[in-house]
Image (cartoon, rainbow, N blue to C red; front, side):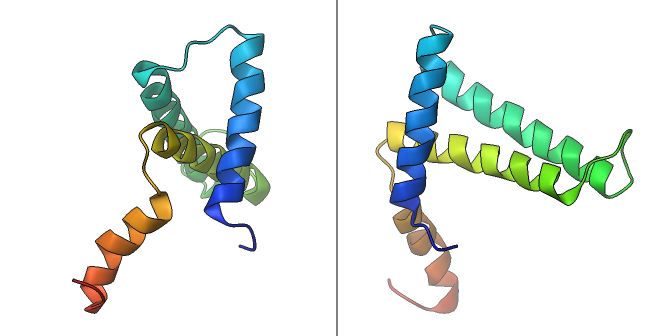
Amino acid sequence: MAENLRDLTELARAVSDIYAKRFEIDRDAAWYLGKMTEELGEVTSAYLKHSGRGRGVCGHDDLADEVGDLLGFLLLFAEWQGIDPGDALRRKWEKHLGVGA
């Protein structure tokens, strides 16, 4: 996990820009939410196959690719909404450790 979230967000945005231009996509709320939902479904499907609970076969790298896609779309959604996902995670989760307010 050497890369920071800002670098990964820039990567996701660059690829998303190419995709949107190529397919003439208007990245609105429906697109961002729909893509995250689609990718979560693909993670679920890949995991079920990988764990022997779904039809077909899925290797660990295939599952990792789907997790990467989901993370990419989550980072794009967060950027679109002006949310720093690292700050949001720290704020939400650190309180359970007695850190922060």
